[in-house]
Length: 418
Picture 1 (cartoon, rainbow, N blue to C red):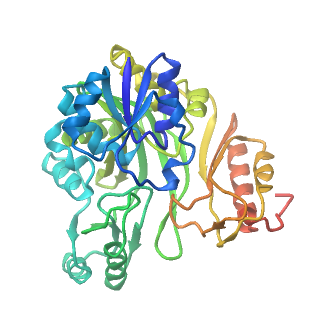
Picture 2 (tube, rainbow, N blue to C red):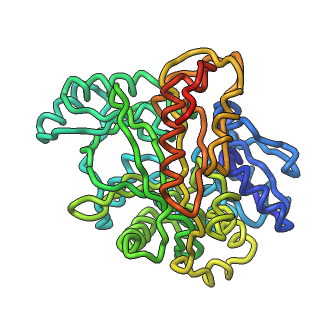
């Protein structure tokens, strides 16, 4: 079976590996000639039969893919969502609803479409003027707001605001910037900030049947300038009582946004008034190591998606409520506290010495300026901690954070004996 992957970066790399291991051939479609190094690092052109440029007329590209025998088109990462769904529609292949395609990429439309279908969303509005956004915040009587670009990823230019002046300044910054994919932000999205416990569900769907391959509970912190910083996340068994309202809510959100056949990553805040949709990406979840997830739970979103692409019947037969985790697992985002030039990678040995560390992924290079962490993009990387006893995981998590306070990633002397 030949499958086209649009922008096979991030977790898309793991998907291609899984498909090749299952005997499929892959074609790469690059949606834009310019992609951030954050996404393209680690990309292996040799994993594909060929790479095609996707910047031209979609109908011509669809015809070329049809002639080459492509039977599915999927997005490898967020930037490929629109083109993948467009090509699948033009080629008459399984995919998502074409009439809601824009709502699966633009967070402004996403909120409107979801709300119209009865899915709870934060109060929000889009603005092309920072002063108008400030006035709206005042008129609504909000005490906190979230300001973000409408079509980006990785907490790019996302900021929590508590005052009208902070809202205005955050909006000014977004409107003056381009998103992670090099597109200028014509508008900025301002939403009420909702509080509660945040989760994300990594799902796989086919013909409207949704399965939750992974459900994780977020823990985030707020940086000194109001930026949300990823701290860590832990898996939640899909069959648990904690997961029950989330499963139903995520399914309704996917239906509303027209996710019919494909992968999706949905973020939900469980508030006092019930679950509230933060956003959905119609693609694989990022920032994960599928092989490690499979080691401790037996399945990952990547593996389930690969199986469903080759044999959709595998998805219908998959019981997501039966998945259990053999260890206490924590995916910890690395945090650099002070900008500076990286001296070496000796710090990796310090982390690998942690007894519960089972995986380390990073993009740090010696001699390169490492910024202080303000979002997912400038985080040094992430680690997985796993053990039978959750207390052991927590001990090593705290040891890691103590090492970071000592300037770990810049090669400063580390604090031992934690």
